Length: 159
Image: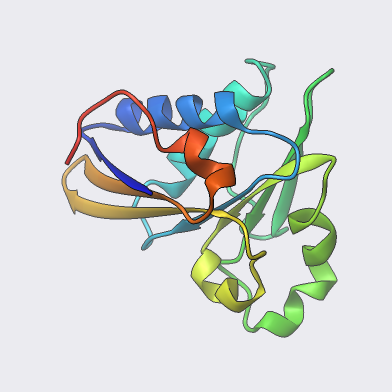
């Protein structure tokens, strides 16, 4: 099942992220695909804000440390993994890849998932972001299995 969302601004992208974050559960894996500047980090800011029930957390792309862990009381942890700087899949074990993406204690969100597509779990939510022009983004959300269908019913602009 697939849905498309047309974002006209960073606020739209963040709002979609909040919608997704409200549905995030322990054990979920969200894999983001898109070029530099396509809105991945902006979307993740909304996901984390909502998933942690608005707990004050500064969300930044973990480009140099590769993983940021966000936590809040009584909420599952969110593991934000950024693969932009990895040179090869051999580096995945060094960042605790298996522990994060198979964790039942939290949910993982992976930027630049295309760099590790063969190592993603069988069951994940695929999110593709495409920069159209100026602030416009086309965001395609694909539920590859029944588990993730709760993510593809959302309000907004259908493309």
